[in-house]
Length: 128
Image (cartoon, rainbow, N blue to C red; front, side, top):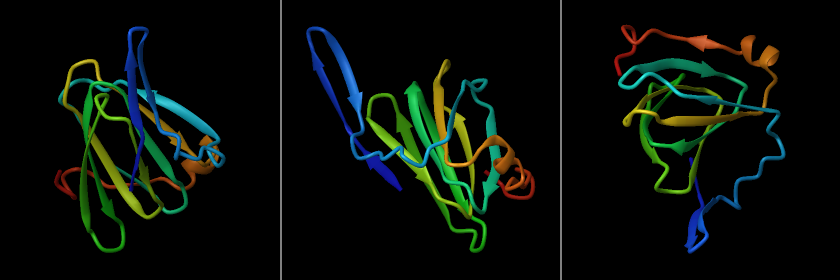
């Protein structure tokens, strides 16, 4: 699910905001700067919610429901102010579309909780 925001520009610079993104359940965040053109897939969680925000560049992000294999694709870019909410029960994967792209990930589980809720499948088993 995409949570949309907006961008405000004036002579002082640019502000990207997503006021509808309620961060009250977020307990941690981390940034990923992947090697360009490397596909990082597939990791999933049955309990954990994740939210993806592109701070620089752009990404192709795919999700696959664990129980039905239904696929969704999202294109996130620093040119749009959006957060992608990846709900529990989905595998996710992503690929940077520009060199130097940075993805910020928010989670509602601690690292210890997330590790015990980690489900992975190889890209050979589940093609990109």
